Length: 615
Image (cartoon, rainbow, N blue to C red; front, side, top):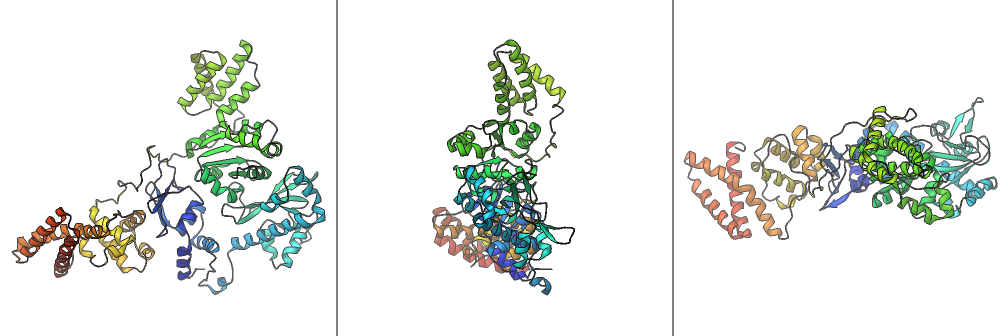
């Protein structure tokens, strides 16, 4: 099955590249380009650039590059058709296929997402209108969530019956297999559909793009388990999906901070409390995939777990994530036994303060240890010091450990050297047996921690050195061809790669057509130039003149040498024009310099044609 080429072009041209990339990482405008931290490799200094006019991106750190379709394919591990279909849905484009059977058939995932969307609407209607949803409404009111909150988060109610949702969906024309594949029902022993969720308050779960993916259902009453999530299916992967990310993305990017909690009502509480940058895991612990997705949006991660749950987190995993993804991990100071929704219900101000006062993970653990210790006696301080040394020993950074040693020494009145020795002994002994060991972080290229440059780095170049004047000409050909259209010629490109790129651009209707026809070094050069920006000048006349002068002078100089060597009488004409051009450039007489330069352009192009190509 293939999508018609013209539809692929429509999807590509209709996609806002900055908005698409901005859904996954923070972008900063630099000139007419946008820059951010690459989502495809770990870096500290932004080297990922987006050109919104051409709809392309390029990373100068790992060389990842492409258009909107490539970006979606690489980031979400989709094939070409799936990526185009996903972008087409966002752009409101109805795709056509070269396979007639596929022309009337939507992609599987799109169909399933539509089915889940219908279920969200039905469950929501039932929560608002159905008499048997009374207990769920009372539960919500008891937790401080009113009708406005119910509508804002599209909460729902699944009736405590065998198949009401399945019957409703089938009446709406949904196929039986799609209901099952979407995780909404299963086939029972009587070969009938039976709803997965019964007698539960329903929290709809969307993926980061806002596409319906599944549900989290909370039992109202004694039903077990208390929380039930959609089964894994093509749409719903609990190790990758985060509840609320579709709503929180823009606020996360704007604030540079994401709050991670455990419950759906916690996310609601944060949003209603003025902190809409919160997300929750869906019935699972935080995973590598979760952290990878979040680090592209913000580098400060605040854990808003119940204090006991946060304190018992796998320290090695937290520290590995901090090192691997260059994030700053902190823990909100919530009271023990109280989740964020409880704190918000009692005092929204207290919830905001808990996040504002969030401390580094190790500091949080030490504070909890000391809060429970007896520090009034030497024996109590010694026991606290021994336990604290064990916590400090788990941190992988030598300098951080030593700073905590100094802090502990001052707090406990124990010699710093004695504590260092205790920490060293604890490190040699390894983590406690109950500690869940995280996989070691993959080694990745580390970027230097300098101030990010305002332009793509010049030292990332094609394998062979290329005359910068030729590169500059190609930038104008790509980005503002009208500046050079009346005189540009293949004669100005002596490097085989720049010549091939020029030929590709001249022979193609669009930049993307040229890019698709390129390979090897010319393709790499095109990708790089696509996110480069030609230098600008307030004096457009002078800029246009300098372009032609800089391009023609070296070629005219070569032509003069060739004429002199062969005794060609035309050498004198070229020599006079070159001398006049140098004089006018020195005086800054750019309009007249352009006239002379254009005379030389004609001579260079004519001479090149005579000998059958550039020399």
